[in-house]
Length: 222
Image (cartoon, rainbow, N blue to C red; front, side):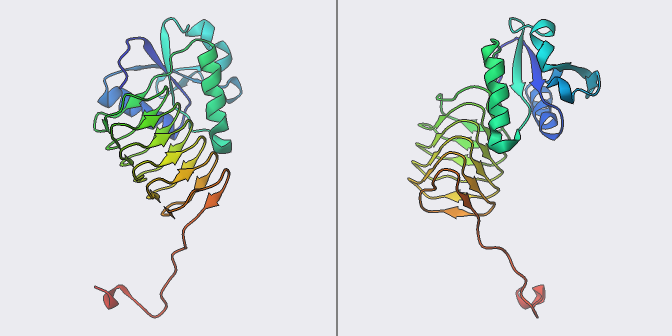
């Protein structure tokens, strides 16, 4: 949970920044002082009623002695963009806050920086979580899971005990991972997949597609 009393900046604008800002302000009672983006994407002076600054100017306008930053962007290229922004801000001396929704149950103390953990996520004791991850609503991480850095676990992802997720992975909605399975870096796991074996680096795993039953209607089943 955000506990330090430095003023908060959100890096990014758009849908995910809106999600993060809502948790900060409506649920955690921490106001967002300003938003920041790369200068090339700054097309206005304000966003969502707050000042909108440029990354290139933020040390001068929002010094790290006074401000902490919450990553409010997802980033493409398998989250390489997110990692690059994270590294730049860290090098400049900014604290990168974890944001944990009050409804989430996070029992581990082994958690890095700049993670976003949303509503009803469950992270049990003995798990380890790195930096810059996004855990969407209802994700479940039971005992002894290891999550690297800059991963995106979509809503209702379910891991089993002793599972490992590397770095820069995407796990889609309702992905289910068997116990003691390792997912290597930059793996992309499509929504609804069941992962029962180790996944190599950069692999793309997708489940069978849904298909239409010709000649059938819902009345044939209910």
